[in-house]
Image (cartoon, rainbow, N blue to C red):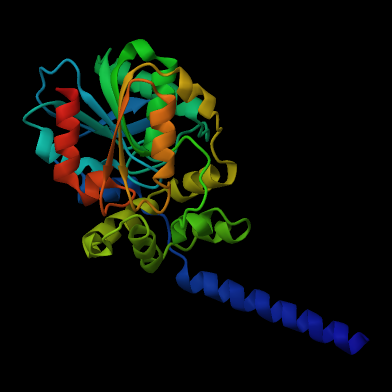
Length: 313
């Protein structure tokens, strides 16, 4: 019996040693945000001191437009997801994109709080600092959830609402993304604090596209770099562990004119959820894009921009 116990102890110690070596070999340190600014900021990039953060944003297009589009990205993404929409619409509208707290070059918030209530308060403060009192809010995925929560809280501040593959209802029968699956798995997800291989980033990006050929090396590098920006991994993990409050009943009270855009091959939030939004928001219009995944503004940017432009004009 003593021999069995001794062998078991030796086995467990060996596993621990191998695990530690594995972590040591693959672990990547956080990258200081100042280092990433030199790589990923553009001439349009600005930083706003707000709520203990330096919020990265871009204010582009027609500066005299008093009803700008405010563009909100999804989970683990950044304002870059809107680059093509800005390109196709900058001669028609003012477009304000930003890296939400916990993501991009903005990074984590000092309160370590991530909820729809927090993001609603944050977005209201951000827009007030910019002097924007009424706008058109556009959100994809998590950003869509933030967009409709903000609209629900401040209907007088939102002229129109645009939801692109938005969160809001329970998700069923979705194949998901490898990165999201690992991040949602207890215990194992803690490894993401230290290990974020580019291969995982690539596989996760391929999971959100219908046409996986659109995933480029440059895109993988940017997502990887921003993911390991100082504090971002811990913030993202905190979000995955806690999740977001779910109260789809609030959606039924939205009376704002709403455009719903959805990719028919969304593997993260199935197209069936698009019909739930259409059903619960009386003044809504639904556009389903053929052979498109979770991020239509990246996979079919020209068509998405054309649909948005038609709606807001």
